[in-house]
Length: 104
Image 1 (cartoon, one colour):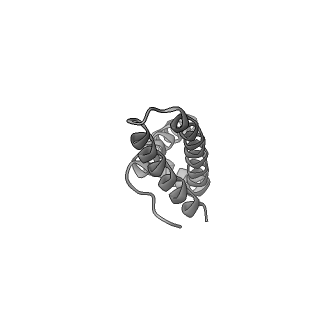
Image 2: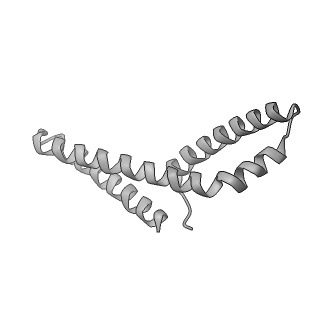
């Protein structure tokens, strides 16, 4: 499995930490005690892989939607804004390629 990079990785890790904290809280409440690392390990083993696949897939879909919108906008943009929008399109195309590589 390929590695996430930069902002993509930061967003992923932030979401993972949140999901683990929610899982830890719910499982600890159910058990009537703080499960600590036991709950963390449980989440990683049960949900880690599927969460990563889902995250990458959602990120990929969002990038494609943004790319489609920008392609429409660039056609209507003034001459001075076109290079800026085209640069954004290039960045998003790179993100889409990275996401496609991660899904393989």
